[in-house]
Length: 150
Image 1 (spheres, one colour):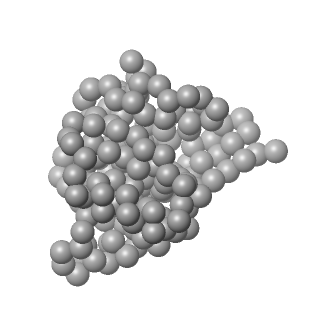
Image 2 (cartoon, rainbow, N blue to C red):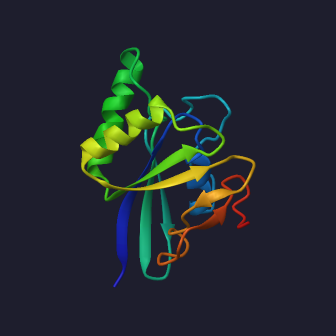
């Protein structure tokens, strides 16, 4: 029997969501840039193993809406969160948790979805779950930039 599920990746702009999706999928499905808000709508990538399949949903960086564009993006993010089986809350491991992270945590809570937190860095190793490659594994150090375990 094959198990499958939708995993939404939520976090602030430039937290490493797109890089992580590309690494888990094993190819470039999401644009990666130093420029915030490069991802404007959700992008889906599929990771498959012997008896499992994950549909990874790379979401735009979540932020408090400040104009009509970010307001529409935020409504779409909230819809995708509610439709997902689980949320991977990606935090920038090089920054302190701030109001933006609390805003995202509240959006995830309001969606009523289970969440896993993954602090990520672009250049250095950080703790991240490797469930996409080893479904029953415990968290292990990983780098989203190199996909290498540390």
